[in-house]
Length: 461
Image: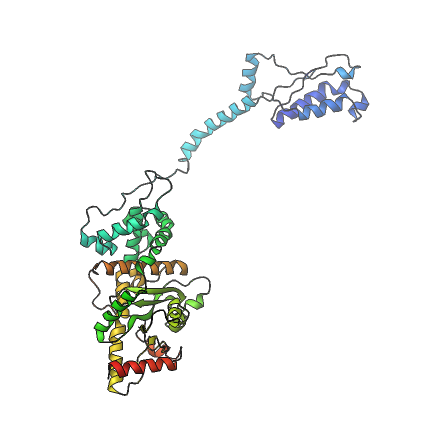
């Protein structure tokens, strides 16, 4: 019994079948040729299913009458001259190697033609260029403050506090250092420019900058309890009250409260909620400031259409005052807020000299929060209208606002000056007319009116 092999190539398989039909099939009985069970049917099925590649030849090995001895044997004794001649003429029956050789020969013939027609269009991978990473080495103190708003000592301390959160899991020669990440983000917040500019200054690519920006912001926000803290102890409360009393003689003040708007691009979802009364899209930010200009409490999560009094009414600090946690401490606010026993607002129409003196002291005391907003936006231009609208989602904008508030407190605590402040810098241009427009949102309480009258009688008469 012979062994049956077929090649992989379909054209060679068909040639083997034709050879088998011409040499073997005529000697089979009619029943086998018509499809009856027999050797013809078996051999044909086996021939079509055989997987091994080889050159096929068929012959009858025994008398035709004994159909069980029909064999199809592989012809493997071809000479080298016959193989070379068939490969040269292109008539090699089914050798897989000859097919590959003809394909390579065809490609070699076509290659000079393509070179004559024009250069081959091959997509080449662009070589990556690694620019020098930005460091503080060689910069003067004034240049560091002007570029990053913090001095060298503050940047090093901040880097130490967040280095663990930003440490890479795998350190390679191409890993971006934590210092470079921090400096790039500080420059973005200070200048209010695009990510491309911050990436060029930092010596990194824009995609890399966009990837680590949220991580750096989250790391700085993790320092909130260290730098933004309302006076909770009796000693700190007494120091704050004395500091405000030294300004204008207004007693028991723990902070000045107000809101400001930070613009952002119209978000895709709930766009109408972020449209404020000036028909621009913004985040309404509430902040409480102490006598030194430190932000002791901040709420940055409400869209621009939300009223100032609504934010305070639903804030945690308001609940703490209601619970009596701060004793006789007070907050000073504009007329957009309803008067409460712990929230003092000015008189709308003062009738007596004592009421006018109260209003004057109240105005000078509350002006610290407006100046703080002006300094904050002048120091970090990304929050100011001159820097344009922030091209981020509302969630990312809230993170940027909170980060800038933390950095502002660091500057105040370390007495870092604001270089070249704007001489026409307003105290709070967004909220200058907020009082009259928003008056009546939160009604005055009788207890608040009595508390204000007591202050007038005891300190301004």
